[in-house]
Length: 572
Ligand code: NDP
Image 1 (cartoon, helix red, strand yellow):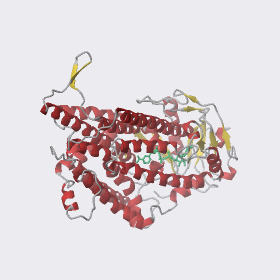
Image 2 (spheres, protein in one colour):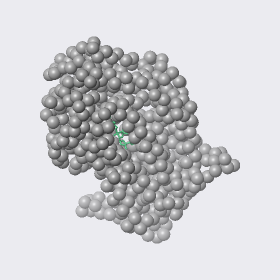
Image 3 (cartoon, protein in one colour):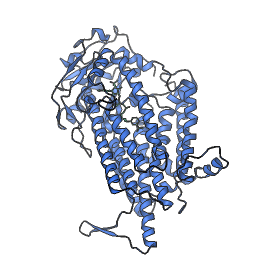
């Protein structure tokens, strides 16, 4: 019975806690509402299935099964009661198939893994290089893009930095835009309504599950309405973002460093550090604290979801609007009045969109990405970054500055070409093919992430059925196949997850490649993202393989036997 085995400026040239886990033998269980209780025990003496087994069920496309909000809220209250005593490393979950309450108990392995110090990224020396290297590389690529038409210039050339740095020097306007955006995102995150979900049991908090207010979708719609109003009213034209992009980027980088250091200092002074290596530089990079919060806002999740992706989209939207305005102005200058669209039976009139297709492509690509993060935000609290990673330079700098200002190179390159009156044009077939590739890869990426995350949430009883737009077909699996591990968790082998173990990475990489391909082949810089991202994901695959092998042992080997390919079926 499953119950038993659950254990455990782009300035235009033209215009401008201490661990308190108890030993296996001494842990007491005090969950008030538990229907069945196990004390922590090593994997070998777990009740339930002691051998790895593959459980097969029929897979159907269903979004209306397993678990209503009511059930989940009830479940949440059960889970809360189970962790109210922080000496207990126990949480309630529901059996995915029956939705009967079941129990998962964290293993000592989970706790050991959570506290083990492992040097990654080349240890203290490697991370020091990265901390210096990231801002320098971002500045270099930006200068090449903005001042050298996208060509990679020799950085030791006379005047490269002195000229280039002028285009990214922070301005008061950039500070106001960037910090204003951050503050607004904080206020909406803290106040707007949303669903509440529980994260994974945190070993260093005695198995306590933290609550996350997932109101991303509400904040996203508020953002869109507000930006429309600000733009239309002329109070803040959206094009200000690309007009000021260089200074905003440097403000973001400086802000990333300030927040990193402040978080580190506050963590150390308050004694709330976790998994410290003893090397200051390494700990600054990896972080000192695990779950920093201000009020009800979890800063790590907030900075990962609300800042980078929204900013990235607003950069692309800004570029698309700017491109439209330039093209309308050019038509007028050439004596061609802009075409007007009469929408809703003539009720609404607007100038026909004059944005070039590649920039529309990038705006769509970034819209899809940010929308996915908002509509499925409730799946994020159980991810590795939120559960395990600390809030240090790696996550802080990358989310505040790295993602928005280096994933936007394609957009900036396209805009620069347009501004210099040399816009990128492709054949209709090429453009349509890329739109098809982007949307297909997006579909696979969205549904693959959704299938796994919902499967995992269902196991833990934290699944919440959502109607956020769009809910795609095959986003939720009913009775999928999986490998039951002795650890207690199940490894999904159904849906996309039977095809390749990292199929969602493949889809993400295809999207990243399409962002480059839409810019043509004259500059490498728009391809920086896909190259960098490949390195990141290959590193994550290796890291995750080690993590899962250690956690699931022979069961993971069985899973790899059943799903032998990592990225592409029958190839790799
Ligand atoms: P994954 O989605 O690969 O999650 C890995 C964890 O999921 C494993 O450690 C394991 O956790 C669990 N898991 C793995 N396989 C299975 C399975 N078959 N069944 C059940 N659980 C499984 O992690 P990421 O967080 O790296 O990626 C999430 C998404 O975010 C991806 O689409 C990725 O492309 C994207 N991403 C984007 C980035 C960007 O900058 N654009 C950066 C990083 C990620 P457990 O120990 O709990 O079992």
